[in-house]
Amino acid sequence: MSVLKKIFEKNSGVKARLALFLSGGGSNASKIIEYARNADCAYEIAVLVTDKPESSAAETLGKENNIPVVSLDIAKFYMEHGESSIMLNTPHRRELRDLWSDELYNKIAGFKVDAGILAGFMPLSNIVGKMPCLNVHPGDLTVTENGVRILAGLHYRPVENAILRGHKALRSSVILAQNYCGDGKKEQDTGPILGVSAPVEIDLEGHSLQELKLIDSQRTAPPYSDVLRQLADHNVEKLKVQGDHVVFPVVIDHFVRGDYALDDEGRLFFNQNGKWQNVETVEFRADNSCCLMPSKVNDPQKNRTQNRFLRFVKYYYTKIVRTPGTPEFVARGWALGVAVGCIVPVFCQIIVAIPLSFLFRCSKIGAIAGTFVTTPPTAIFIYPVLIWVGNKVINGDLSSESAGQLVEIFNNESLTFAQKWQAFADLGGDLVAAFFAGGALWAAIMVPLTYFGVKKLVVSYRKLREARRTKQDQRD
Image (tube, rainbow, N blue to C red; front, side, top):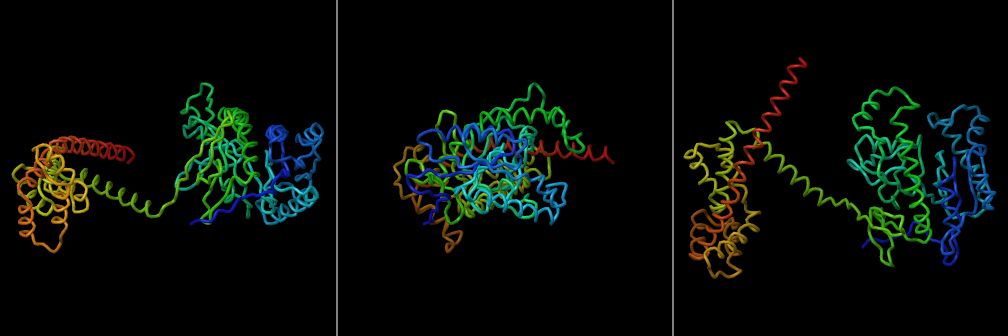
């Protein structure tokens, strides 16, 4: 059984002391300070921290709320050490970032804070490796492709990506910030997703997606001031009000109460009403309700099963559409094969299908492949159903064990072809009649579906192939 370890655990009855980091206007910080005034809130703001003392709202918020402020101007720090840019694109600049982070951490150490809250704090800092820090992100980090969070990134870009991908809504995501290495791109927005806001509808202000994609394709180099950027800024502000301000303060509260834990495999758990639930994240809404979002468990066995199924589907699709002959010729063959698979016992289907394919002048490949609608593995499930249905059709009185006996015969590899036929006949007329009646009924349903479905697939594939050839010829 997995062992759970709380991500954060405070002393019972004592409010957690937080350092609130901000670089800009401080709207998120202001909402968190407001939330902290609630009597039942489990945290208090011990200190405000900023890297931009002259332009951020830290000093104003500090005075208004009687909270001490710590500042260390990052741009000035870099200039004093001979660098004009704070980017992490050189070894020296990365070294300076660690020096700056260490000095900033030493400044706040005397406030005895338990955790940090990055409320619009722009610089990457090694402080997140010294104490747990939460960050809010303007994008739904639960959206992934091949395991990659496709709405990660800085500033307005996650919102632009959501717009360009045709998403109808945005979410704010609160994550446990991760320490960085090098330029920090690998670790960006990779922490556990502790909470997301309810969806916030994207407002395109009358612009079409096609128009916005065209604008994106014509961009050269930032900074941008086009319509797409303006829409992104507009939706970032909308998301901040309806997303960040709702989800961030309450996630912090749950976090410091010890309601989040990780197991020894790194899976996230949330404590709801005293019961730990494995989740991908938790959606927090404006009405103070929350909804657990189940974990997308990475089950290797399940993945292998899914992959086998996908390969199976792809294999048969390829077999169907690439079979030579007219669409009707191909479709007749597959329909014949399915009919044989439904009616004829599994151990002699191909023997029956091949001569019938000559008789009906249809695809032999389809006639053979179509019989695989029933195979020894699938017969275990299909044949009992056929017998049960057939028994109803003939108004028989078979026992529930009869189907099991039939399946045992079909899957018995020690029996010869003749012995299997004899054993089949020995099961009695009622069972044999029920088998053929159920098979005939199933064939009556499956054969027309197969014929028209295969014909449509073949026609569509050939039209697509012809269109590609025409397009290629035009290019040439």
